[in-house]
Image (cartoon, rainbow, N blue to C red; front, side):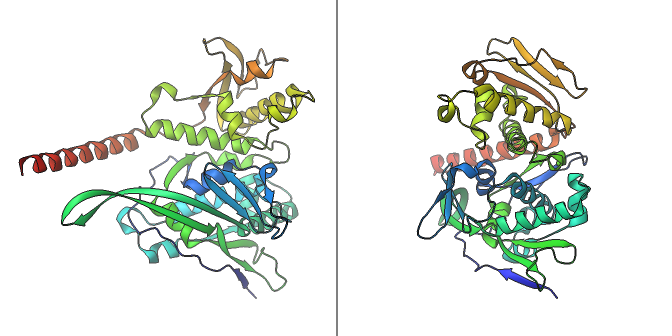
Length: 378
C-alpha cells in the first residue's frame, strides 16, 4: 500500500511567465533544468555546514543562497544526493511546460519524478541492487530534508498606460522535494522505485526563471566513493562551457583555470586550512588530478591538458589512456596558476540555439530603438 510523506507547500512570489525551452541534442547529452538554488547546492560542501545547537538545523551559505538542512543526522550535500538531483532535473526538463505553455496547472503536473532501482542501476552501471537501493534511499531522504532560500530578478515589460520595462525582485524559500511516496514500513523504495515531487516553488523557478543546460549522462557513471570530486568538477565545466556559449565568449571556450575549479570543488581540502601541516600535493593536487582523469575515463572529456599562462604545456591526459609528462611534485602556487584546456566528448552542436538567441537579441534591440524613436518624436 502506498503512503506518502508530504511537506507543507510554501508559496511563491514569482509570477507565472514564459521560459526558454530546451533545445535538441543527438542523445549523447541530456538537457538538465537549471536555476540558481540548484547551481549553488551543487557547489555546496558538507564541511561548510553550520549547525544551530538549539534547533539542530544545518545551513550552508553559497553565493547568496542559503541551503537549509532540516535533519543533520542524514548524509546531506553528498555526491550521491547531487547525482539523484541531476537525474530528477533530467526528467523534469522533459516534463516542464515550454515557453508560452506555462501555467500553474502545467507546472504542478510536471513536478512528479519517478526513478526505478533498475533504471538507476542502468544509468550508473551498478550491478548490486541492494547497494543501488541504499543509495536511492539515502539520497531521496537527503533531498526531502533540504531547502533553499534565495533571491531572483526578472526583467519584463508590463502595461501601465504605456509600455515600459520593469524589474521584479523575488524572494524564495522552499524545499527541493516536498513529497515522497513510501510503503507501509516507511521505505521510500516503493514498488521498486523512488517517487517524489519537486516543490512547486522550485519547479516554478526552474520553468520560469531557469534554463536548460547540456549535461553528459556519463556523469552518472562516476563512483562518488572512489572519486568524490568528479561530479562537482564536471558540473562546473558544463556550467561554464554553457555560459561561454550563451555569451558568445569564444575566446574562453574549452578552457578553464585551475583556480576556478578549485573554488568550485568545495569538498577538497583548502590550502589555507592545511598548508601548515603539509602534504599539499597528496591532499589537494593529486586527488584533483585523479578526479579530472575520471572525467576522461567515463567519457565526459576526450582529453585535458594543463598549461601555464604563457602557453607552455605542463601535462595532459587523453581518452586512450595516454598521459603526457604528468604533473610531478609541483607546488600549490604553481598548480593553482595553471589553465586547463579540455575537449568535451560528443558535445551537441549549438549553432541553431546560438542563432535563435542572436535573433531574439536583435529583435529586442529593434523594439527598444522603435520605442525610443516614438518617445523622441512624440
